[in-house]
Length: 437
Image (tube, rainbow, N blue to C red; front, side):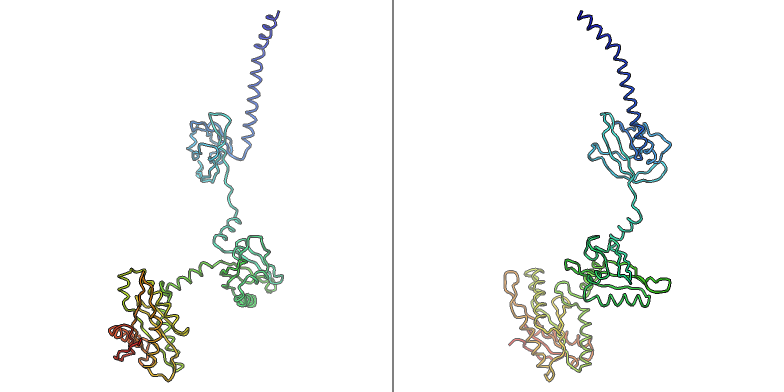
């Protein structure tokens, strides 16, 4: 009896199994159709790619994004249309400029996804959103360090584009722009001329163009250049100013550096020959107007080449820097010291004391300079004393012109150098003068 019951159950199962399989297959096909319908409705492209590198399925959005809307991609090699994605889902997202079949290049983001089976994978294709004109404008302002502003004259309401906040040391939105805030940020020494420029623009209608400094909340100082013009109403009355502002801090620093390099000795920081000649020209002009004397002193270090040869150029540079510092400290603020090359320095002394003879002037100048240079310097591991030779020419006694005065002082210096250590010569006088007794 039990055997018969088991046989009947097995028979019924065999009869029902095909029906169950058919029903399951129908449900699977329905699910696949629903999935395919859903995929077709997507605005993003979807490709199913076999591990052989060929496209098995795709939706209409994929062909549209690849510029082949009426074509089928099934069976095509993926690399004919898109760059090959990475081997794993974690590193397969990439952006690429893809040239479509229609000749249009499109920025696309391609993401690899698991397909649910071991024989294929999915690629999701999305267009990269293009920047709006406003976004491009804002980004260009940021990178160019240029911002736009709009000032309502009656209400003092001030508009800043996003790039301007950083020019005043603020995060975007951290403060509310106002004319009062602007004035508070401008360096106190520049506020008057900035305000005067604005008023001139409002009254005359001429362009507003000012360079000024601003003080950031952290105390640092930055340079801005502002340009703008006035806007008038229908009755011709000024109602607002509009313009642009640009950060020129780096330009100012670069210009200052270039000026320093062009006019000063890079080693000692002293004025170079160009500045020396300009200062001498101005000093002689002042002496003419005030009917006073001025002295030009050529200074040449003795034994400098021997120091360079024995200890190297770094030690020689150390000597030059120390000499420059000592000369500056020894002379008055109204005097000038310059390095004109090698180990040669010059000094310009203005307003010499009246009633003194040339000899007295020369002796006083020589003693002052020799005393300043007399202390030994540490060169390498040794204490080294640096001697000097001086050539002194006095205006207007020795020459009425700058070129002639330079020539006389130069000759006097060479004459002193031939005479021994720490000697000076005055003008065309051939008598040796001992500077340190």
